[in-house]
Image 1: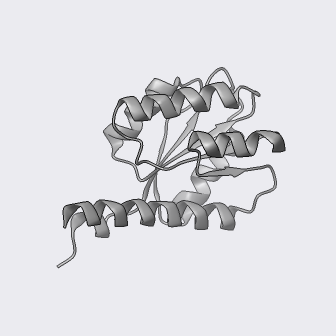
Image 2: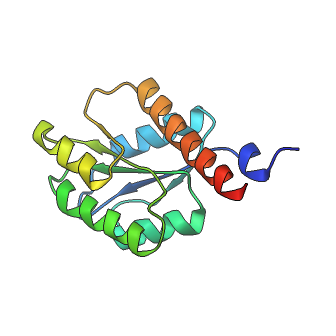
Length: 146
């Protein structure tokens, strides 16, 4: 018998943090994920790290995807990761996309960001990574239930 967790669609929260109002890329990613069969929650623009963390918990998402083009990615992602830890939701994998300088990628990964997608990353690759991260999270959850 399969559990509800294993039969429900992968659920991804797509968010824009801070004052960045450019959301075309986030909407393209959200549409691509929907077209690939994912359930997508789009929080809209100008969200705070706390709003994103709370929405992810409330929606019981498998992955959080953040789009940042403003240059404030280090600050916002650090705050988001702090909020996820504070709320006991650090098990939700977080990915980041946008205009991220190459030297910032490793510090972001040390912070806990699972993957950074730069401009030009293929939608197919993004979908594959998000699917893998969601499946890994679900497998960890299933292990804790045993």
